[in-house]
Length: 236
Image (cartoon, rainbow, N blue to C red; front, side):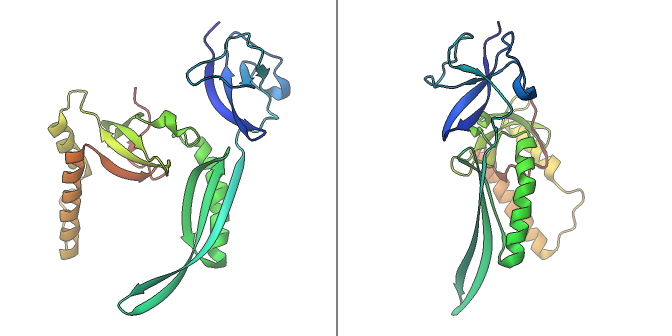
């Protein structure tokens, strides 16, 4: 038999358990579930996997909900004092928890409209987060993931607290050294024959400063995973 492969985790009775795909070991496939999926209804030390005949392996069934959501909404008033004047604002914040973990958070306008929008967006995101190539639910697996960024080899760094935020780490390989990588990055991100107004020229200077800092640190501060334009998530 092929070595059991952990494929995802589920939460039962408030505790987290592993689900394995064990090729060559099949159950009856209750409720049309995959016959080679098995729930390990116990715990092992980190790095260990169960034997094929372990007594705690239970047939996985579709009656086990893989994604258990808890979604919280907050309406927040806050003040802003500037130049001897105080203004007041209101925002709506949404926190999305899945299997007891905070997997995504966003905020929008306040008031009734903001709450309605946040609720609708959270429903959309329940599907989006599941379907996205990035694993929002087990982000430890995403640390150091190889990607292409503007077609250049790179890997990602995962924010330790807001795990839906990432950074880009250049990979100086595939025939490109550091200078060549950054020269190509600048070429691919530059506008063709730009015509700058005064404000635009100031923004261009700021962009250049950011690039110099990124180059020095070998790190690009990207941000929200869902704003993943120019990222190709699949690189061997």
